Amino acid sequence: MKRILIVEDDAIIASGLVYALQQEGYEVTHFSTVEEARACAAAFDLAILDMQLPDGTGFDVREKLHDTAIIFLTVVDDEGNIVRAFEGGADDYITKPFRLRELLARVKRTLNIHSGAERPAHLTLGGVTVDTAAGKAYIDEMILELTALEYRLLLTFASHRGQMLTRTQILDSLWDSAGNFVEDNTLTVYIKRLREKLGDAANIQTVRGVGYRAD
Image 1 (cartoon, helix red, strand yellow):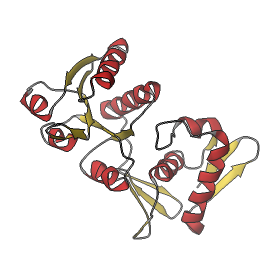
Image 2: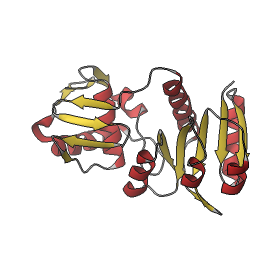
Image 3: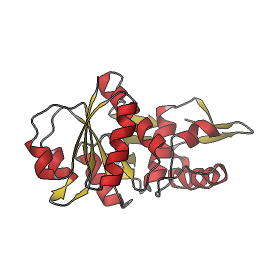
């Protein structure tokens, strides 16, 4: 049984997470403060850490954890915090408010990665390199200025290079900064923006009536 640590001071959010994860078959431990979490000597497979806690931040708890997958929770979809989270070893982050089904899917995906088939540290798509550990993308040595959602969209294409992806498959991997699923008619806009930023470095082809293929 996988063991999950939750460090979250909002009692309503925490109780919902604990219940939902237990229903999925996980063993769950919950703390409300950095001090409580750091005093725990138990080992965990995954930790879900609120970035803003009464006596510190999720980063303070992260320092205590070793060989543990990390998902950060944040109320602000701020690029600086997101980059810091990835650079600090985070596997994923989720913005509040979030949909429970999405979080459970992210938990399952992260645990699967840590149990075996990890995503490569670097992915390429045409002339674009994606540093998955740092959460950054480059053309040659120039960093691409991407929003969090544009980065996730690029990561989806790079992870399935040369494969045809339906719009539904792409939409299932994305949500907006409020934690809601991206709508189908909005996806076209995001892909257009990503194409503009990638320029000639990568090719995102439209497969009419079906989806997209990138290489």
